[in-house]
Image (cartoon, rainbow, N blue to C red):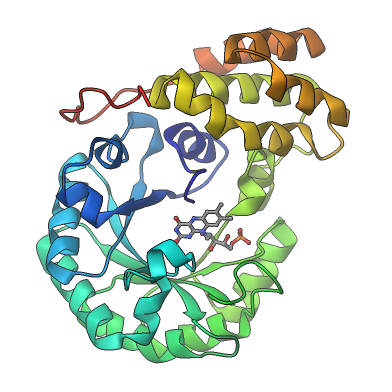
Amino acid sequence: MAGVSVQAFRRQGRRYGAGLVCSEMVSCAGLSHGNERTLGYLRIGAGERPLAVQIFGSEPGVMAEAARMVEDAGADLVDVNFGCPVRKVTKTGAGATLLEDPERACRIVERVSTAVSVPVTVKMRRGLENGSRAALELGPRLVDAGAASLTLHPRSARQMYTGGADHSLTAELVERVDVPIVASGDITSRARAQAVLASTGAAAVMVGRAAQGNPWAVAEIAGGGAGEPTREEVVAELVLFIRETVAELGEKRATGFLKKFYGWYLGHGRFRRPFKQELVQLGTLEEGGERLFAAAPGARDVLARLQAEGAADDGVLLELPISIYGGG
Ligand SMILES: Cc1cc2nc3c(=O)[nH]c(=O)nc-3n(C[C@H](O)[C@H](O)[C@H](O)COP(=O)(O)O)c2cc1C
């Protein structure tokens, strides 16, 4: 998830039972131009594998070149984005636009899957407009072009995140292809995951928003949940997340990036509402950490335990030639 799936998020997902985690979407044009921030998305740590790195773009050759860079960086899968509904992306002919440009979409998957030896997968929405069935027409062609698996988020691009994900389309897609289908959309609990798996025949579910600030939901969905976390556990995970994100993005970028996470962690009735506001307004992330520990002193011990278990393992498999990444 763009703006969410940093390394700390992916490692946390793995610790709480996710079988596979995915990067933010990475611009092929950015990789091709050697943009430093974009190259930073290819940093892969030891604790986050198996990892899919998702790329977006519209030029088959540039996508193939980007896929090679992703493979070289150590990704276990290259995922291709045919689902992003954001105008900035669709107006360039990338993301969900490709659902309505099947020839180009197939050429992209063909070139990308020929370029790398790791599996190539595709993430789709149902189509651009409400009621569209474009993904069902396109899916089998993408498999013929080399896609090893397809993920469907059955909302239209126009819908953005409104309404519900119509998983009857996921069931139809499962019938049309013989590769594993992953169901994405509104998976918020184990009961919901089981219902979607049973009604669609999908091979797996993908968890998006439910995992934001809530790895305990991932554990519950994966079947290893121990119920609602204590305040100490919440604070320990949030402080760890802050520290790891600062290490990855640098203090300045991390400060803006982290703002949305306070509400996600501290909500769910776990902490009183003004506490989040207070944290966002503090001068430094270090002060935020201190304020969090003051609210749940036992969290220091929980954090020490997490660190002893290697939660913060940030060993980089491939150090890219990035000079200022992390500064801003
Ligand atoms: C903040 C945000 C960023 C997202 N970024 C991406 C992305 O980069 N690539 C992608 O394929 N899907 C992206 N998605 C879509 C999710 O992967 C998922 O398909 C969608 O949110 C529905 O699943 P959910 O109900 O579990 O959140 C994003 C969703 C959100 C909310």
